[in-house]
Amino acid sequence: MAFLFYFLIFPLIFFFSRLPFWWLYRLSDLFYLIVYKLIGYRKKVVRKNLKLAFPDKTAAERKQIEKAFYKHFTDLFVEMIKAFNLSLPAMRRHFEYVNPELLNALTEQGKNIVMVGSHYGNWEGLIALAPSVKALPIATYLKINNPYFEKFMLKNRQRFGAKLVETKQLRKTLTQLDQADKKFIVALVSDQSPQMHKAKYWRSFLGVPDLPVFTGAEELAKKFDAAVVFFDIQKKKRGNYQVKFELITDTPHQFPDYKLTDRFIDLAEKQIKRQPAYYLWTHNRFKHSGKKKGGVISKK
Image (tube, rainbow, N blue to C red; front, side, top):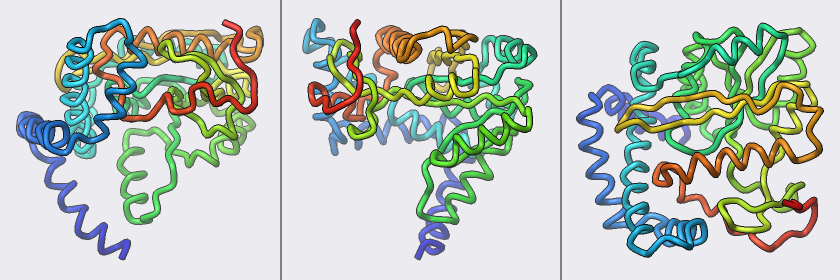
């Protein structure tokens, strides 16, 4: 059954990934009408999130953000399909790295790098980072039940030189690289909600108090004495993104527990507030607000 499903779906992915962008964006406009107007996919969640995050905005202002988000959301879907067939030069035309020299300077100083960001814009562009840097880029993924799709996804997403590691194998992989003195840049998208029983730290996010937040990036940085870099994605126009790297610290042990996490969350909030329509509002990010059962709560 797994092979049959792959056999039926793969030709569609192959076909649509080879359509020109202008064709795909016409499809995206159609998907927008279906997803937003007809089905209303997770519309209640999006509206609740926007109301919690922007209580000072009028209903009309939040509605404008909502519509712009769904247009971006369907664009993101077709862009991710298109990414399966983009060459490296084409990727660079659509995803510009503004200052990769920051990453290279840290690598030359002998530092590993923990690169942290949010579900904002289009983070798929990071798969083409390897040719621009002197360390091995690593991203995590959750195991796919269909082994044929997993093999296809891994081969495709690693074609520019990055390495994908199953989430539960990340620490082991980084330890092996560190022991072999092979420098790495591990990219983590760390803005969403951890499981409550795993939460170690609680703080506000976008003004909503007492939310669990991921602390894995900070923990990895301290374990490997790695520099921490925020990747700030900006959408310049439809299909075009810029990624700017911002150093948070190259001395993680100088920060008390959770202060590096605070710094990342502050930067993510600034990014989202700048152009809120490009954040992934369909995730029920605020569902655990006020339900703290353990861990440390922010004193901010």
